[in-house]
Image (cartoon, rainbow, N blue to C red; front, side, top):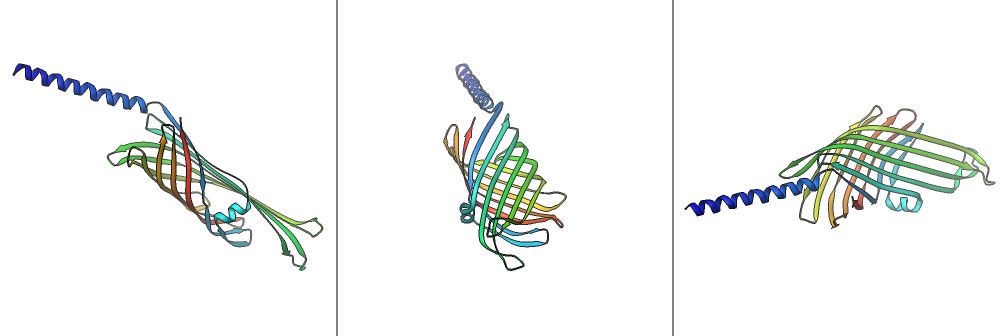
Length: 257
């Protein structure tokens, strides 16, 4: 009986030591800073309406229009977390579109050439606190979304002389709160879903939803397949209004370091 008791005590002690070692190893893996950078592409659709001065127009942009008129584009996300608790999230997307036409009529019914250039950049910067639950982890987020819109429109005579031009430079910052749920499906697949909402002095409402899955290709990279949608209702009365929904499927490659 004494030997059985001693053996049981030894097994319990060994089990405790082994469990402690595993826990310590997990804590070691999650200690300090962990960073990732993701380059992604978004098949963007933009629907809504916009007003520049006293000119109102419907906005209807699809991926084909963007590919036919894009001059430059970039989409990048940078994220980091410290001790698997406190983190940051920075996402920036930029596109420069241009279009021209040879069939613009002025008030005198003279034929003019027109050229328009549109540049839009959207920056999201957020901080978050991560909590672990039985159903996965939840990141409670807070931050900003900065919109930067530049529009240049020019009309030329048939001789190439500038007839008229108009430019708009409009940017604003929206303040956000949100949450993100991350849950491992298997050892290779991970589900993620996030939502935020906010407003500002000229923005009645803005919100964004991102949901998808990640596939771990190796220890230092993964593939992100997701759907993203962003709404904004901005009104700088008399100058510029922008009431749109931007949405589309997203594919990105993340690198971890």
